[in-house]
Length: 287
Image (cartoon, rainbow, N blue to C red; front, side, top):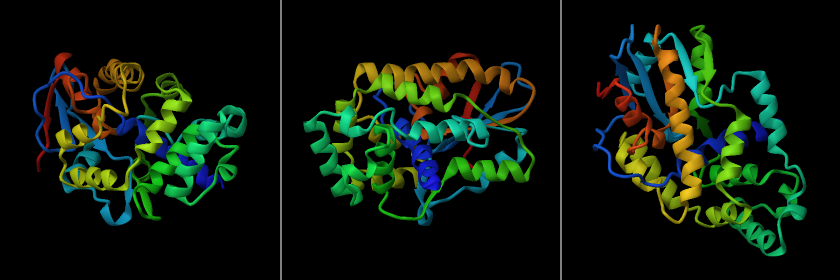
């Protein structure tokens, strides 16, 4: 059960990656998941890598250019530092709801959620009653990949960092990420998002990812029926802005490998464009 919580709450990150509203037009980005950041006083170049967070083992890949960039780096930077025992403990605590879903949700919401669970995960509301709604969402998101052998990019990067004795840091905490999501969506909106969950759409997202098509990933991740202005503020604008405030100091004197959800990289208020506006040269690594 502990492993279930760990996988489920780690998977919550995918909800952040695939639920971002399209922004005003930014320069079209080349096809690459890996980007080099240089200039503006940096001693060494650093790297941005867009992850899909989780993917079926058969679709998992890590390009040679990414491995080379990782090997050149002095530090690993993730959205959340899952190698920190305190963060893991916080994650497990927050996987459980403050109150049972049967008390938190009204009858109509419970009925909808029960139907979604039966259809997508072969489960009932009774089986997840003690979980937080976000944990239920992450479990359903995992099922949308259509396999039982998911691999998590962030966990694999942490494993590689440990082998190379690289320090690992996070851009935010589990608590702050949960708060962003709760501020962005009401219970009813969360359930509406789950009703839109689609295995075929996830397959298309994976195909774009395998082709390193950031623009395609961004377009497919920005369905208007998933993201409203309020959610956009908390899920995208504030988080990307906060990250770009932290990165300059992290990159100043050493090469860091920054791995965040791929959809965070594109768009006018994406990390790539914000770093460019801050004076950095950000270019795709194509080989």
